[in-house]
Image (cartoon, rainbow, N blue to C red; front, side, top):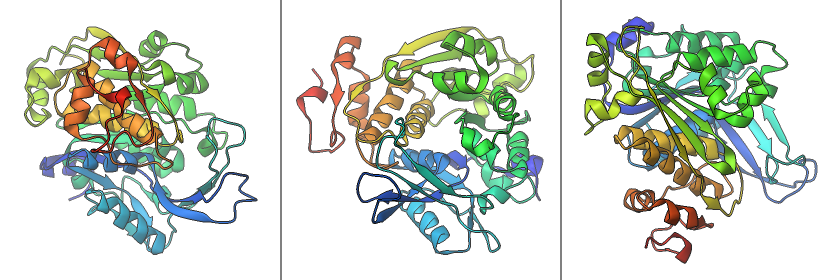
Length: 389
């Protein structure tokens, strides 16, 4: 049995979130400076979707990563490392004809002109993903399917796959989509803006930065972004140091909508709690009425601005699975992002759930006073600036 319809029929929801996308071996510099001058590199892993899976698993959720890697040592390293976070990698496919992608980056912040990244991913195993060779039964086995615009840029086959996975169909998981506009991956393709807009409009939960919306679509401001993306039940507009604005539709399901809400409810959450993030697969299933929730970001002593967007998505999804209110979902996203911002790499251990919940429960004034420094997530460390009153 193969294909999206077969996968949906065969799905047994044993996983919270399934993440699909390319992961690569990352080479991190031993010292600051130009790539031409760095004498040695340490090896890590990087990939937006696998980052989300690892962060969710570290936070105690059942997460799976589905991808395609080469039948090489780098592929072994990726699969073994991602699995070490507690992520299910059983559906990862090996490609004997194509290599695992790798990339090198400088130690300087990617927001500066001195930041360099050298990708070696053209023709990678992941770029060969297509509707014909992915395990649909694994992709549809979770409550949430998390995708990103990076995958759509890898090849025409990858774009065709994302169009299949975001197509409305009965019983599909809640589709989470991070726009993740990466202009260099599209290699000047004039369709990147329209493709990303198309995919985002077919998703149920969308993450997009104000900066990338302006770059990709020429749209300025959270309200204008929502006007361009009215379809997703939840739209999270990330505003950098200003925080995030969440637009959530209060869905009123009809018969088919109610069935979908029950089928996609998070463990321990009521249908009403999850309805704000439940897919509507036809025009008559729900009547949306937006609530708008601005959530300020935290003050963070940043070590490296790498992987923060993926961590935010993981924190938001984690809180969504737990049925928490919209404000708390965004606050958990900010805390997960702060954990990554205070370490050099893409991944780190998040704060314990109890500690994160205590911080999320702070009143607005106390939340605004928080300042998080490197090491703040350690269980035995509670610096003054993160103590609860």
